[in-house]
Length: 105
Image (cartoon, rainbow, N blue to C red; front, side, top):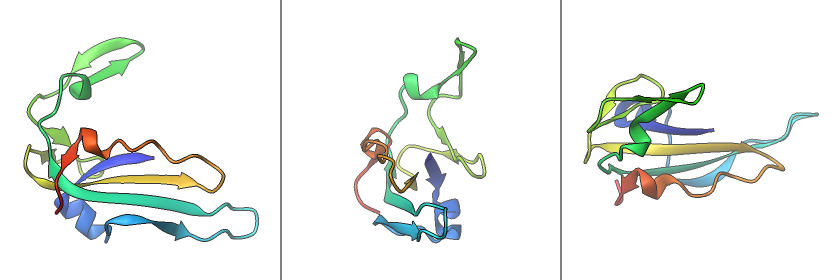
């Protein structure tokens, strides 16, 4: 799972910078891991703001990202976070945060 969250949603989720085990393995359920990177939003590219439905491209609003939890606009320069989660035994998503964020908090 990869999500880009506005500052308010990232704070509500109590997300902290770094990589860690989010949930330990229990019985037959594998452990869950997360990586959180806080930064400032970069200007979005046309590719990042194009949604494909059955192979047909649909342009989205340029000049902003959309929070994956509350759908609020994330404007360039706004503080936000990239949140990646994966299960034990899976490879985590390659580092993608630099495509959306720059700089520390």
